[in-house]
Amino acid sequence: MQTIDLRSDTVTWPTEAMRAAMAAAVVGDDVYGEDPTVNQLEHEAAALFGKEAGLFVTSGTQGNLAALLAHCERGSEIITGDKAHTFMYEAGGMAALGGIMPHTVPVQADGTLRLDDIRAAIRGNNEHFPRTRLITLENTQGTVGGQPLSVAYTQQVGDIARQHGLKFHIDGARIFNAAAAAGVPVRALAEPADSLTFCLSKGLCAPAGSVLVGSRAFIQEARRARKMLGGGLRQAGVLAAAGLIALHEMSQRLHEDHAHAACLAEGLRTVPGVRVLSQATNFVFFWLEEEAALSPAAFAAALRAQHIIVSPYPGHERKFRCVLHYWITRERVEMVIQAMRQVLG
Image 1 (tube, helix red, strand yellow):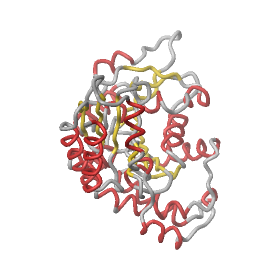
Image 2 (tube, helix red, strand yellow; image 1 turned 135 degrees about the vertical axis):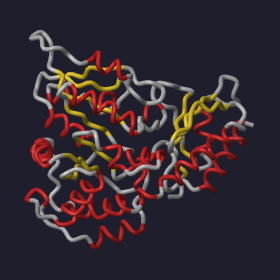
Image 3 (cartoon, helix red, strand yellow; image 1 turned 180 degrees about the horizontal axis):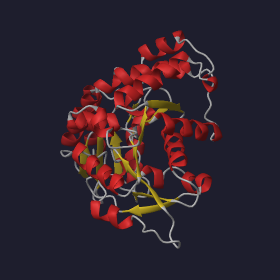
């Protein structure tokens, strides 16, 4: 990867080991349940997260929607954050395809939903109301800076769900980053949840795919939803082979991305016209001040001329997000800091 692309960890490329594994993958028809590499990925992912079964899906969005369709009937309601990916960035799929109504509560600066807000959002047994069926969390919470949610907090939300007879789903697209930040195994963060999705691409570098985990009965229902959503991929072992490397190897190095993010944030504090807003896990948010030497558009263009890609965060012209990943080494972090000093100095 010649360009230093800081827009997201979705831009990662598969590693050489992944490419070799993909070329050598043993495959079958996954819709028939006959792709051995997909079956291995699903089994090992479920075991790692302490769940009974797994389901390979094309994306985190598809995994989240399959989970919601499996948990909820039409006309029911889920409790989710007002900045959650399921609410903001999944094209309204829960409503358009599932007839599911989101009941949003504010996402706090630390990525949590206030427990009292969750309790207050649970509907009583009244024929005028939609039935509350599900609570969802996102870990890490990307919209507020990659904030990791703790084991203790996740358990508290799980307790609320059980007390009220509700299901609990975690959008764990970057759950391995949360686990790395807390120094805990991912199963500790997944334990209270009935279902969880995690992404094999992003910081784990696989070319595509996510895995949804939960009970065998739940995964059976989610498999039907995946089929309805067009997610039967047939000889998908070529992707699952890269996913196995992502699962077992790339997940163990994410602390490096976190350290590089901290280094980038520290360096940006020395750049004129830049104000660091937050740094957590592999995310850095910064603000380009009004008095900066360049406008946001000119700033981004000047960096692109040096093969560094950044872009304003959607809806915020002067707010930028940098996401660190495998292809952004410490040397490249220093190159970014130096380039920003040059264009804004």
